[in-house]
Length: 201
Image: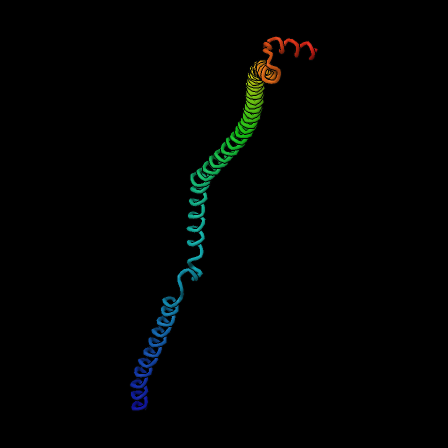
């Protein structure tokens, strides 16, 4: 019995050491498995990090909203307002310039029409003046030509009368010569001319 009890006492510490070793190995394995699981997961997806992440999300969103509402959006609105005002001013200026251009075009057309009418009136006056001058020059030329023709006709008439007078005296002289040669009696040429004139009447 003593031997059995001593042997059991020797085996009991050995079994207890083995049990302790197995428990230690199991704890080590569990701790390694748990730590490995913690180390292998993505931190934002860990459940214990959800609350801080939501807090930081709310803080960052609030800061961004304050910055956008207080700084960015008013500046953008001011820029858009200035742009809209500038566009409206440019449109008003373009409409005003268009109205002025139309008025200038109408005035230019009116001026051109007046100048054209004045030029036509001046042309008609010049044409009429030239026609009057030509008519006056023609009348003067025709009058001068008529006077020259009348003077020439008078000279021709005088020359013809003179020629006829010379022919008459020549004929009277010839007749007197012929009578003298035929009859031997001398007759004056003036006497024959007077008789010829009396017979001609």
